[in-house]
Amino acid sequence: MLKATNLHKSFGKLEVLKGIDLEVQPSEVVVLVGVSGSGKSTLLRCFNFLERINQGSIEIDGQVIDAKKQKLSQVRAEVGMVFQHFNLFPHKTVLENVIEAPIVVKKENKETAIAKGKALLEKVGLADKADVYPSKLSGGQKQRVAIARALAMEPKALLFDEPTSALDPELVGEVLAVMKQLAEEGMTMVVVTHEMKFAREVADRIIMLDEGVIIENTDPKTFFENPSNERTRQFISLVE
Amino acid sequence: MEFLQTMLEVIKRTAPGFLEATVLTLQVTAVALVLGTLLGLVFALMKISKSKILQTIANIYITIIRGTPLIVQIMFLYFGITAVIILDAFWAGAIALGIHNGAYIAEIFRGAIQSIDKGQREASMALGMTRGQSMKRIIFPQALKRSIPPLGNQFIITLKDSSLVYIISVSELFAVANRDAAQSYQPFETYLVVGLYYLVLVMIFTAILRWYEGRLNVDK
Ligand SMILES: Nc1ncnc2c1ncn2[C@@H]1O[C@H](COP(=O)(O)OP(=O)(O)OP(=O)(O)O)[C@@H](O)[C@H]1O
Ligand SMILES: [Mg+2]
Image (cartoon, rainbow over all chains, first blue to last red):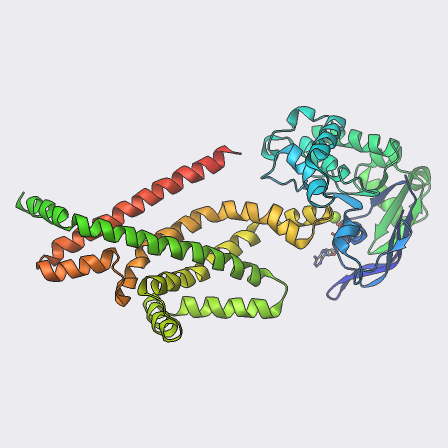
């Protein structure tokens, strides 16, 4: 579904991604871990072209994306993203946040978008908050709205960049529960997270990034019990 | 007491002329504000655009306008434009004031747009919006709300600055007061009264603005 081949990305002189090869199968849940600065966010952002890659290629659904020839906005519409700081639109109500892109980007008619938007809010347990502004929500509620907003575009895959890192501990569970449900429904997901319990239970595969290269790429059981790399072992002892 | 008596007389005497001139002052100001806001929007977008040429044009405009006195701009435009096309003093003055304001309003809009968290642009782009859609639907509405207090301030400055078009003989409030002061031999009282006119106008304007800002906040 998503595929990076020999992906290189630099910011000025700093090379952040040094030749990443990664393929994510349809309905697969891949958890991406690594210490701060290892390039996790950058890799996610390359997958929906919020960053321009310097070398290598990215395929979405079997199609190589050429940033020069294709309209990137159309490509981005197919891969959803959930951010650490939610980035809800503060001037729009919860429902308006959810229906905005379907109406503006997909030109859906308003009634259809509203019906689908309400169903999505129902799904993330926020049907009663449709007409409220984001400033009135808790962090966990905001993130669930952000997930509903991404889902409204019916993306082929969803990228999560530390979706629970900005939340109070007691609010983490409600967001992870929604993500787990999506995984069970067959959504293709790449998740950057420090929630090792989630990684263990939900991930099909865990990938460890270290200084811009993949040093571990394996199933959760092997990752935690028998990692191949010394750095992975150190990382696990740190987070667990 | 005698002074108050005189003042009341001056207020009464000048009222018909001053009130009529007030209308003209408000008209000059309104035209200048509409033009200034449109220009401000265009030049703000040019300044934050990716095109170096557009950025440079915007920078030149803003530097020239901010670096020269308004009164010089009014004279320059009046004699410049009227040499090419027939334009009466009212329109020349209002347009000069509008162009002048455009530079300041451009900076207000640019600052407000750039103050919006970049996560907003990223979130909208990640949903598939183009740069233009993101600006129109997500960034600008938030920036506009943030611009309202400084815009209000700029509008008040414009109202007062409109007095400078007296120099090209537009019969607005200050021009009429100026004439009256010379003819009546009561310059002190006359200027005091015209000052009061501006003060009242500004206070009304400020009150409207406060009310509007309050209403915007209630929405949230
Ligand atoms: N826009 C940018 N300009 C310059 N350097 C950047 C930019 N974005 C990221 N970097 C640098 O790239 C490196 C990798 O950053 P990235 O955000 O991908 O790391 P991360 O693994 O997500 O870390 P964290 O766990 O702290 O979120 C860091 O050294 C960071 O400073
Ligand atoms: Mg990160």
